Image (cartoon, rainbow, N blue to C red; front, side, top):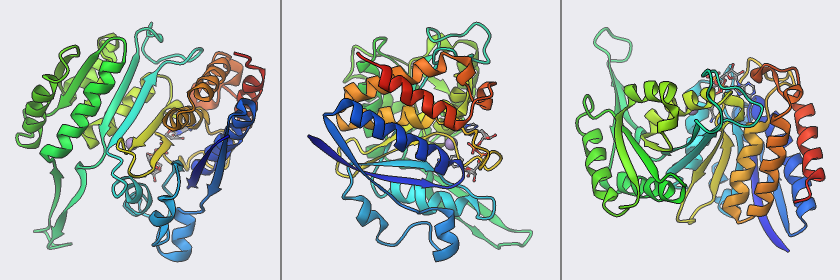
Length: 358
Ligand code: NAD
Ligand code: MN
């Protein structure tokens, strides 16, 4: 029996609701498969923990996490704790020290789900966005002087290193190469940001030489938002900086139907540290406690985690179950225009796993 240790960190708001649903589904899936076991430990870190202890996670939290094969994460964010505290205190406090530098965000239109783009279905929109996840605009560098005075100056420094850009570029080219169309779009803003972004363009051209079978092009990030909405079929694999890809991937999620279905993996490709899997969305306090959070993004996230663990058959079974459920509009949550609850969708996915006999 193959065994894996999973750390579950539901954290805040609907993160708690969707991770609870995800753990139920994973339990049924492992039993159905029979070949592997998931030993799951759930941690109560997040904003409630912060209000009690003054930190989002314990000081030895990362030491604890190092013993796990993967981390299954919900979302951070609470109405009464500043966003930079919750984000830096937990999510980035795991991603950055664990060198999860490749953030992978598949986007496609699932069966039964309507894109806000008229006439665009699964065949015209099937992307994977690679977000550089360790440096750029989220490097945490900068400062403020003359705080509160009219002379106040605040800087936010984006850091790009040759090593950091080269490794994400290789990762993206390799991923593009593994997909049928072998197509990569490198996104920058090298007209305005003339240091880091120009280096991105140069490194892209260098790394492209290692992948002669991949067709690639360059786009400025502002023009990219137009291309995503007007010519989605011309895109396949996309690589961009931490901030640019953060923004583009929320747009991508909306174009694929809802932020509630979008998954992501924060990968340490060298596997020196555990990787972390989470839905793209945040804690959504506008719908917290209502039982209507869409759990599909968190289920799809579980597929990515299972693939990472090598359990590809179980991942494929879960994806089939997800698609069977999304195909039925009666099983859509309100973000998709339906009336279903988190409970109804979860039960339907579990039933589809149990009924799946491939
Ligand atoms: P959000 O993603 O929480 O919500 C944006 C909108 O999408 C809301 O209207 C919400 O109701 C809806 N939505 C999101 N997920 C949904 C789901 N699964 N089902 C149905 N509807 C869903 O973003 P926000 O409102 O900008 O931020 C709320 C908090 O979350 C903030 O504190 C923010 O910092 C935090 N945040 C955290 C993460 C993360 O943990 N990775 C990501 C984004 C935002
Ligand atoms: Mn985001």
